[in-house]
Length: 388
Image 1 (cartoon, rainbow, N blue to C red):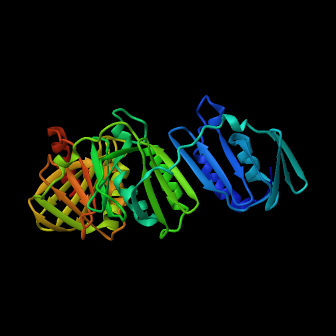
Image 2 (image 1 turned 180 degrees about the horizontal axis):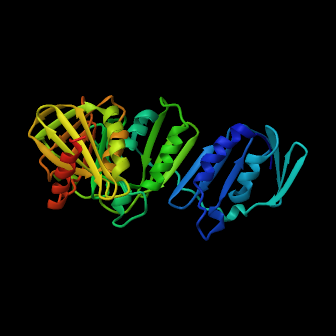
Image 3 (image 1 turned 135 degrees about the horizontal axis):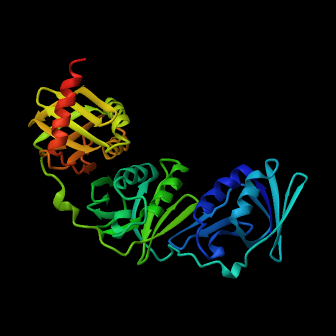
């Protein structure tokens, strides 16, 4: 095999494949990329067993077709640091010669026969078709509440995918909050619920970030995998064999208190309160009154207190509730609207964060129980603060 490579274009494709390899596995073959070159196209394949990718490489001219398995640990750095804008790869009998300008590098490849056979979408069913833009948004919002680590039960670090009446719904939870996002899709049928791991979803999001937002993504599935196919990439994610809890039971149908506010101003104020509480308990106390008053406060015993009062459109009952500042902030930041709507059902009910003009996103944040000591401290320090 002999390839003439445009460095900048090729590295974009190589980067997609390289991220899908496993650096922690005891199987060295999983820390590699299979390059298959014909005169028609060059494909890159990689897997960590739970996910896999097949993508067409850009910026490659095939002089002699062939295939080889390249270890990524050192080879990836050589590709990135090679001199000039172009370099040449020649592979013969498991040995590689890389020429870049006047520089030469020699290294060995892995046996092609040892590279695992990747799952294929050839026999998979269509789950839905959706634009890269809409898929990006529904994944950002719907996976907000999933845990980042591989936790047990497995649904904590996964997201639930289901289609009903032409609408894709993505839901996640870490038991302290729940996020739900919906978007219309095409060429779909009502489906069962399927769990996908967050590790794979994060990689799907990275791939989407490199694509034209208007590109069409075809989502397919079989008994073991989900496939995301678009442009020159096919990414496979192994499904999680578990069930998502019956979350529909906790979705609020109405709210005793509703607040509409400027989202940017709320984020700025919450960020300032978080400076005080983030190294203590991350507890933000919210006081809402029907006279359009929305007050956030937080305290750290050996440091001080922050109080932010803001204008808001308030309807319903007076309320005091405490929530985690990190969870509140993440729910606000994942949105893209100028205003945010919040719903409350008493001090012990979930806080609901949603869009003001549509019901396509919902984040429920569990309240923090305020102890008598917390209540006394809040009232005392607020009173002291009013004297300045």
